[in-house]
Image 1 (cartoon, rainbow, N blue to C red):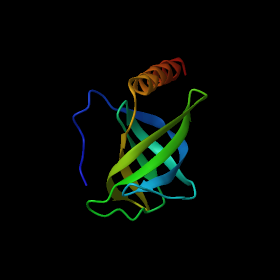
Image 2 (cartoon, one colour):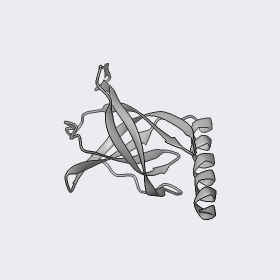
Image 3 (cartoon, rainbow, N blue to C red):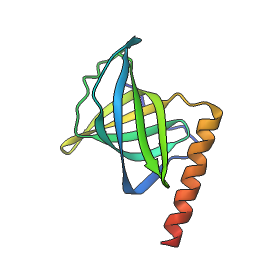
Image 4 (cartoon, helix red, strand yellow):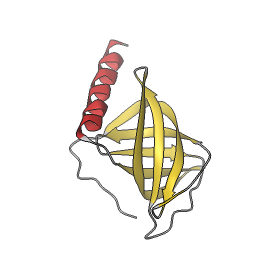
Length: 123
């Protein structure tokens, strides 16, 4: 598993952002999986850190692609990405996700984070 810490910024949520994920491909082969619950811990235009009570069977040199959806500012966001790493945390697991976003999707994340921060300042 690899770690990516060289991004311009990463926004950490003060309040948990709940969402759903499902595995869509394993080593390039399409799979059917049920949705699982996740909490978005932090986000950047290129990635997410998720936490889930579910332990995914991730092995070295294995590519697992997921679809993840969550809501920020009443806007439902859905992205696809690849799991880069897994880490046990208390009674759950955190996952680092590299998003496969186009420029407009990266900008959407930036815009939603800015709006989210403005709303927090008003509270």
